[in-house]
Image 1 (cartoon, rainbow, N blue to C red):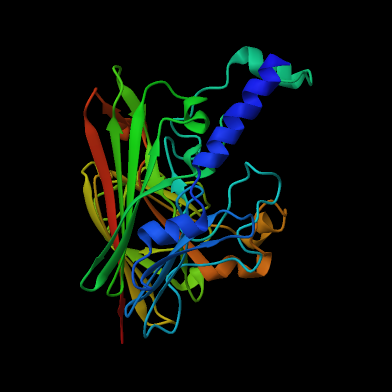
Image 2 (cartoon, rainbow, N blue to C red; image 1 turned 60 degrees about the horizontal axis):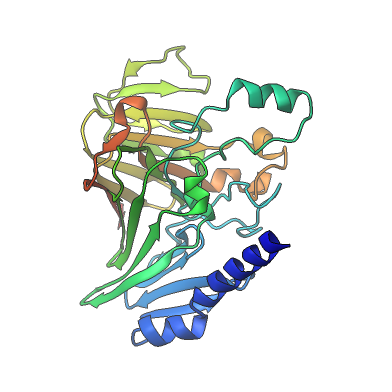
Length: 346
């Protein structure tokens, strides 16, 4: 009985401390350029709007859900027709926009599932869920730290501190600061992790942008010369672990590029829509590219219909490989920053 009352009291405190939409608008709303509204679950979304376009971000998971630039015929980001609805359950990964992957990427860097737990699961015994695919920060409700309206740029800064969703699978204390900026045909993403604990904090990270494209089979990717290259798809020439040279023709599958340095500039060319999407990254040593084939999407495990599979392509700046894992000592911080720009081609 006492435990039940304690849990109820804690829930009441947390609910009372969560800012309402009205409070967020009163504190952070800025001349129509920054405003807050509720999503289908009543949770906050921040809209950045100005003469350059619009950008929307869910505070739950700091998920960028939409970005469109003024004068562009097509949006920057792919938004599934089904919307951002988990298919299999609340911890299902939601495809579209720009999900945030932290403090691990996919299963890379995720805590190992112990043998005893695997045995219990094989015997259908109740055990705690395995570490979720693409990490835990996407379940957490971020707080608004600041907004910025300076010249042609509009920004919001979100913050996440040590919390249950992340602490369930990691040790240590952290402050995660995420600044999202809307500019002139540019979307800026800047993620800073600071170790505020007494022990080493280790993590991996990445952005998972879903770019809207005319046809993923017709794209080319430039800027990966000299990278260590791996692929999980069937290649015309049966090779893996090669040094890639020249533009890469893209089609369904997953490719991993390791730069070995913390700077990269990638260019995705869409000849049908006559535009280039350029990603300039600092603080990330790896890039993952991905799109799903129709057969895979037909399994019904994604919030994307099979007929939409050719209309998006993912380029994911990250620290993915074990060699790229970040280890922060007490007081140290690291920033992964990507500026995404769009320019027309002839």
